[in-house]
Length: 588
Image (cartoon, one colour):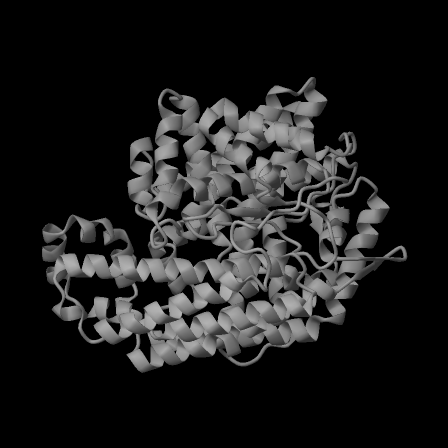
């Protein structure tokens, strides 16, 4: 994989020593201090127009400071083993946190306003009404906010508590090397080997990966225990019903909707993952397959490497066939070097599209190995990037979508690419391979993520009784994963440490169900598209432009879909089931 792109971050800052970084920090500091001096303890006395103008000032400060933090973070992900990069990020975060602590009063005082007062103010000012979605989300935390001093304390201590444990986790994985046949491989490379065509290489990679994780499991378990306890303390003070409650509020989704999603998927384990893995075992001539063969290519799959330029054309074609505007926006990422796909030691091992700030542009990071799955990852991250590019018109406070809706464009982009690839299949053998690859991705996105969420729920509950040993965490992991895999996947004891490489457990607790939410939502959306394609793409683009200004019910209404309807999830899951039906037919 030669000639892979590396992003250009000059639109933000030239390098960590760019004087504009300190200039922006000092500007933000001065503006924040004046903001606090002029308005602390006075929000209740403001009129509608004044409050609207004040939110604009607050938004401007937030965007300027966010630009610095975003740059420091993506610069760090280029090489997370570099101590200087880590120090730079920490220094920036500390400076910005000190500044933002002085602004904590603003949202607290907004929440002290009564609903009646705000309703009256919306009628008096169109400017304030524009910010209603942001104000609604701020006020969603009203019952869970603490005193001003405690909120400032928690904000300032965040960098010396949970945030630093996450930093330790990131830096640890950036330095771990896995010894495979004499080669010292970083995590992205060893994970790539788990889908290699050679079964012996897959097995060796799986066991080598387990050995590397096991060597660090005590530290990883300590980090996990500390993060969970830190969250539990704060959740108790804030009076959240359960460990997942704060995530649901942040995602702007009701507890009962999430519960319905989780139950719907769990009830379909047998019909989805159990049935598919039994089918895959049969294709491989076995009654069951070891866990390292779960994502193995099919025996007759073409394992050629897909060059970067070809991957680019595949994805652009898929987006362009749906709507030219999407392809045009995606093209910007390639032309302007907004993508870093290069493989190198120390680089973040995952993939993301970072929205940065609305006045600039998003950037995408991935590790491109040239497999079909990597092409789908490119389609996925470009979906995020397109979404972030379209929603930036909503401004700093309302451009971002909740996690549940943030996966919509990414998963939809994967579906478009899958359907485009399927059209080009020359025979049933190719068709079977393409569908199987998509089913595995969907199972990883839906079933596996729900199993992850179940693991997190049980883990957080168990931690209430005291610190958990790594073996206890491993037992919970094995129990929840076996339930989702079924009897056609053989799980051996060393798999008990695999929980520790799932970064979402550390970075963003209970993030994982958002993937299942997004996949099922997109499946239902795509069915609506197939049933009535006229005008769909325009409504879809309008939905993406909305950013965080609409909740899921409002966003889905133009498509006659409703996530609170129990049949919604069944409809989404039926798409996966239908693809497995096709595979069974092709296997006859």
